Image 1: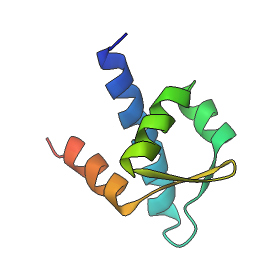
Image 2 (image 1 turned 180 degrees about the horizontal axis):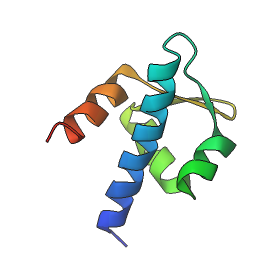
Image 3 (image 1 turned 180 degrees about the vertical axis):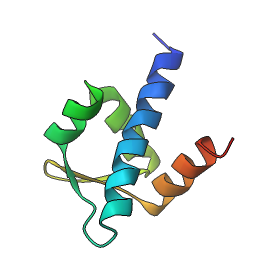
Length: 78
């Protein structure tokens, strides 16, 4: 089912990953467990964000990409 909640969940994921990368620009990886603790279930959101190239995965570590940073900033620019 298509819901606006999915879009909100993707944005929350980007915001958490953005904060982590902003905090540690050279090593902004976040454990998937920590992301799930912060925003809840993320499987669908992550699959879409990875497909779009907004998030990169290395095992159980996640990193927002440059494209993800721009997308996050554009969504919160209002």
